[in-house]
Amino acid sequence: MADGSILAAKEIDAAETQVEKPKRSASKRVGTPSRKYKQRKFKVDLWATDFNTAEIGIMKRTQNEAASDQFTKDMDIIGQTVDGGKREALIAYRKELWDKNKDFDRRLVIKLFSETLGWRGTMEMMVGRSLQLSTGAGVPVPAFSLNLSRHEQIIEVERCARKWPFLPERFTFFIQGKSGPRFYSLRRKMFSIGADYRLFDHQGRHIGGIDHRIINLGGSRIVRIDAAHSNAKLETVLELFSAMLKFNRASKRHVGKLCQKVRDGKISPTLTHREKNLYYNPRRRR
Image 1 (cartoon, rainbow, N blue to C red):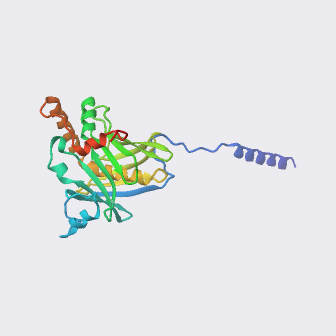
Image 2 (tube, one colour):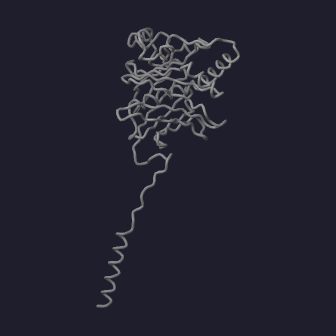
Image 3 (cartoon, one colour):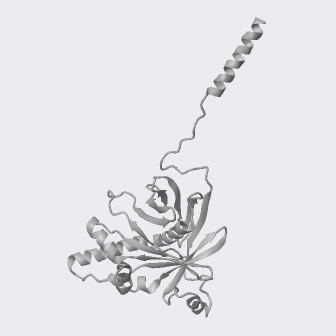
């Protein structure tokens, strides 16, 4: 009986110890991507040549121009967005505006269209704003404005002007939503073969990224976003940003040379009529 009582007491103590033992909580470090959320994933595929199914055909360009007012005569389709193995969007830029012009008339304008050429968004270089930031920073700082379909806000995507030499670049932007603004930063990875970027929210959480596929000659990037943070506006911004990276190095050279010419007095600052309108006060008397 004594042995049975002792054995029963030990079993009770073991049970109480097991119940009172605290559970180990899963820690989540700032800057570490969450593993419990599913990821939204799509591909931004830029072509190496002008031969593509979106423009091949005698009447194809005329049909494209008639399909959308945003598809101007100098538009050149350079890529597509692929989601689940299917083409979901087309990417184009104003070729003559970027390739044929110079100084203040040269601006990068990238547009995103649906498969049927319905306009989804535009990303364009703001030369005036770029020179303003570059003059203060002493290094080229390209700035872009994004106009999205069915979104009233003009989203400003700007390269971070303040950074230590040789450190990876950063871009920042925010999106105004129903619950308030959401701030994001895209930081290029320190050590990577291609131009890979990680996406962070305003709390410093790693919520996605852009992975460069260097095997693709035209430039291919896989965009990943945690499903809990993904939305149509953010995806559109990342699509246009991924397309802009094809011109990123050339954009910085252009802004740097333009800033130097203005500083040396070789040219006088001026802005195109289109860019002037983007700076006007919307509450001004008309």
